Length: 249
Image (cartoon, rainbow, N blue to C red; front, side, top):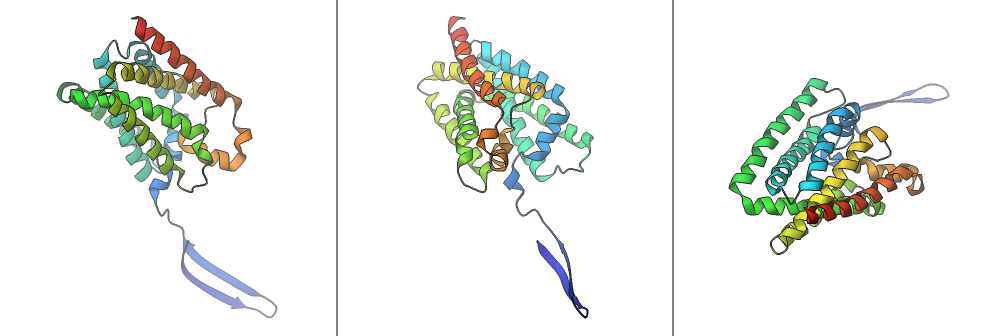
């Protein structure tokens, strides 16, 4: 809080203090992809349900069979996430009109299509790294939501980002040596996660990834909805099914 001015008024038996000031959000990255994006998703579940469900099922079943499709969706998704992180953190506020937020979605989708096509045609090695990146990234995201949120640290968003980038880089690098296996497991896990995350937009019970640490700090670990653990278990089980299917076809 920064105080612009202050003054004291004295009467016979008391003092009256008057403080004038403004509060400023010191670092917008403290809430990377936080409340504003979560509110937008909650207000428009159909849009995200259709997108997550369609991509999730396709990648889950045909991830390694149709590698070009998986590469395209990987580039598309990464582009969207980066644009969302930047725009919803730095520019979108509570009073931002809906049309502006939809414009962000439209622009990010168009740029995602361009980047997905560009990766597919111009950078095959980077594309395979990116596909396998999702394996470690999703594993790290799940570990963050179930374990790392208990670390006593103020900037939990930073822990989440570092964990995702580290896990993704490890599995992305492994693609150089175990491409077939990393692609199958990566697409199966990413597809499972997206499919169940899509269902959660309507069924509820899945605490937003960026809000998990605040939720645990506010209500406690024991108050996490039971449905959340079913989702986590479901991701693991569905991943195993996806791996089995992709190895058969």
